[in-house]
Image (cartoon, rainbow, N blue to C red; front, side):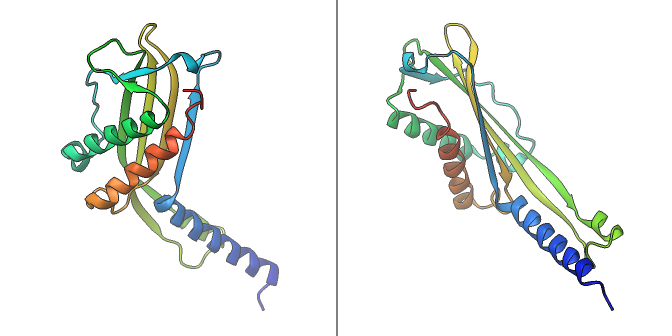
Length: 182
């Protein structure tokens, strides 16, 4: 006869593993950093920094011109609702940089089998991405705010509609963390 507590522990471990695997593909983790003492009310204009585009690590995204267009359009739309004006011809107060990275990650739950937590453990490979937005004071060239989102991208890279939705979601959630006075 199986110990009921051991069986309950096994069920809990399998459930947690399943939620973790599901979370890898669906969860979007968003964070931000604001430089202490920065008065965000003084910023009214911005522009994109000169093209410092780095490889994302995935040619499906690097060769997709719609990615950058959608990203910039989403950021510009969000910033317009906050009263910031884009000034490509003038001297902006903020310079915006973006960085994106796509990597394949492996989630291995096989270690759980060794400890008796699951009967059928599995390994999954998924695409994971990070989108980072930097706001740099154009006068001092110092970072004043950074926001980033990390999450699973399975099926997103090869589906333009899903990719646009993921970009929309990531940009909106990142910029929700931007100080309100900006």
